Amino acid sequence: MRKLFLSIFGVFCGVLVIIGAFNNYQFQRISAYQIHLQQVDQLTQELNDHYEKINFWIANPSSWDYLASNKEITLRNSALFWTRHRLKSTHVLQNEIVKNGLRNEFIDKQYLKNLNVISKTEGQLLILLSKAGFKDLGAIGSMRKIVHKLERKPGVDLEKLLSIRRDEKDFLLRKKELYAWKIHHAIQKWRLSPDFPREMNQYDSEFTIYSTSIQRIFTNEPNIYQVWKKDHRKKLKILHETRINLLNYNLFHSKNIQQFNIVIYVSILVIAIILSIYFSKILSHSVTQLQKTMEKYIKSNYSEVEVLKLNIPKNEFGKLMLHFLQLSNKINSDFRLLEERVERRTKTLKEKNEELLLKHDEIYQGMRYAKDIQQSLMSNTKELNAFFEKCRLFFQSKDLVGGDFYWSKSISTEEVDLRFFALADCTGHGVSGAMLSIFGMQSLDEIIGKGVYDSGEILNQLRWNVSHRLNRNNDRRYDGMDIALFSIDYRNKVMSFSGANLSVWIIDSGEIVELKGQRMPIGWTDTHHDSFKSFSIQLFQTDRILVFSDGISDQFGGEKDKKWGRKEIKSIVNSNLEKGIDFLFDKIMFEFENWKAENEQTDDCTLVMIEPFYFSQSN
Image (cartoon, rainbow, N blue to C red; front, side):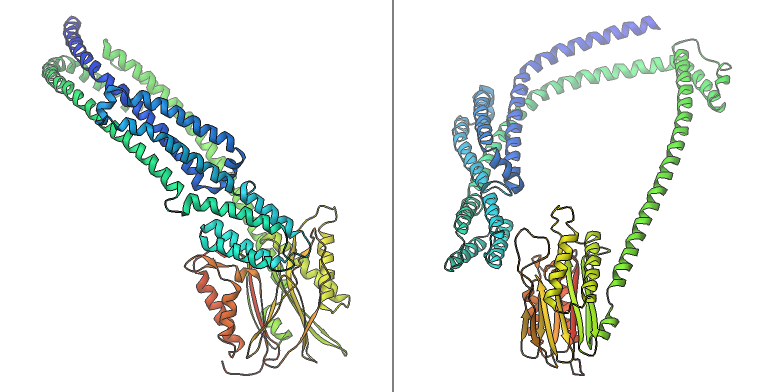
């Protein structure tokens, strides 16, 4: 049987040699197409990779600082890429086989000619991006250095500067000419004031450079970005068409080989079927015997002892059976070892998981307890109604604990009947903000306990406590809080107010009177600030007091995902000046929830309305 098998195998090898010789002849005919097809693919891939890299830089402003700091290197690499691309394109596209794939003798010349144009356009694009910058370098970096310098300069109108910075951020995000016009208009208007800082001229110049660069890149029609992208896609299209044509030529010649091979393979298949029937009869006996042996081994549950009792054929099948038995025993042994390892590691992972769950529960319970402590230090609505005639409160932290807090205190003696209230927004939110809020409430209690009743002096001492207790090691921590503090003398119906970056609105039946807080924080600053002042105002029977933290006005929402803003709150109040405190509070909170909708809460939110001399009235 072995000789017969070797004879048939020799004839089969001879047939394969003939087929191989024919295929080699045909492969030589299409090898040239395959080589140049690979060259076109490589050229296309390099051009596409370069396009993706430059396009990523353009679409991600955070990479503009890299372009600004490495402008010369980037421009040199860009020019070097196009020089190399020209050399490769000349070698590939001017080959006779590739020209046949182009089907147009002028396409390769046009392709090579326009490389100078796209290289120049790309250079201009990279220069404009490097001029613009994003954070630290370019025009943006220069603008921010000027603003930081002005913020530390005494006498600068920070409100105007803040307004210009807001328009600047809007322009950075949306790239609309409207915001650029607003910035130039605001600087021009400020230039007419005697307090106009000369540094703003340089700021205006740097912003002009940035806005001009952005408009040339993205806004103008046609802009540089569109021209660059269009030229790139045109080049890729030419290379793609060339690749398709070369591929068609390759498929045409491959089809001839396939047809010949089909005839040969069908003949071989017929012969193989005949031989298979013959050999199957010879091998069936050995296979049947081998099958019975395998069944006995399986019934023995793969026992190594039973292997010696098996009837194994003394031929090639028998040798195969022995190797199989050895492999099976090795697999069983390794499987048992693996099961033991998996069991041990599963147990270890279960213990670690239980430990992590326990720690998570401890941390969460600690945070819940911290929240209870923070809320216990603040008055609830019932206690506030005991201090004042009528009060409505909305308090919602962004996290489990927050940095907003409100505080109240009553001083009633024979000489005075004062009721204090404060709303503060501490730096940050979460645990850090909550710690500052507790410190702030304790400090206010200590200051009032010393007999200090003037609102301005209270804030002066609070600022001293915060800045000195947080900076004992001269590490200059800028943490602190914004606060609105007022007291009401119920005997004389006089309200005294002091504020640090927070305001209080007094609402009567005719208008809104806003008592603005001074633009000074409670905490450490690099610049010198004056003392806090007290502002007194006579209250009337129908007056209502409104105070809220920045988390209310800064909440993002609406169709355009913008901040709610103080103007929206003031518009709601102005439309309902004659309404009572319950209607006004419910209206504001209803509009706030509609604005917020499904958006994430931006910051800690607190809003308080007080009607100190409440009396029954229709809403």
